[in-house]
Length: 221
Image 1 (cartoon, rainbow, N blue to C red):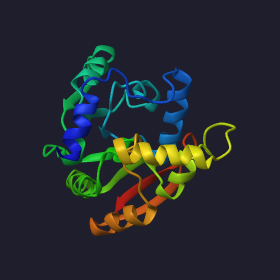
Image 2 (spheres, rainbow, N blue to C red):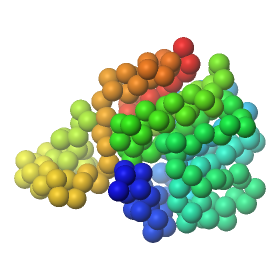
Image 3 (cartoon, rainbow, N blue to C red):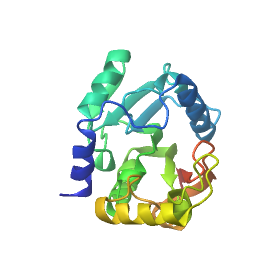
Image 4 (cartoon, rainbow, N blue to C red):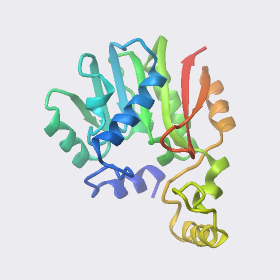
């Protein structure tokens, strides 16, 4: 089973995006963080890859633009469509998705790259480049940062908990047996190398809501 097939199976029965909170306040704050990355100018055409159930849509400010959401979970897309029947949605796997009809001002994903192995990230960058014009912005949000992986699994980033070697050992064993529940973790240099390969300049920003994640903001060189 490929990585894409494994995650598609995982998400096929899920009825929510598995975020740490489903409150409007959480989604509002998360959207504010993403909007800072997008800049002040409202894009005319937006593509979101891994749009899930659309819980954050109302806070992103895309109600007045040409927006398309892509996700490979039909259940989550049905929930999105029920809330926003006029939004354009498509059921596809995000790492290989190419819309050959349009070029987009903004292409973004959030907490999606963690489900891509390195060949899938490579494909994701190549496909995004095909859908960009000279002034497009490409944002990969909330990528798990491998530099902080051990500290995260040791519990050092969970509220007031102190890092614990026992907790880390248990997490390491569970990861070896069942895989990391987060998915794939990346270093900035790995993303920078792929960005350069595909002709992007890249800037990195730490996440405010998730201390163990970073954002990659890319433009064509």
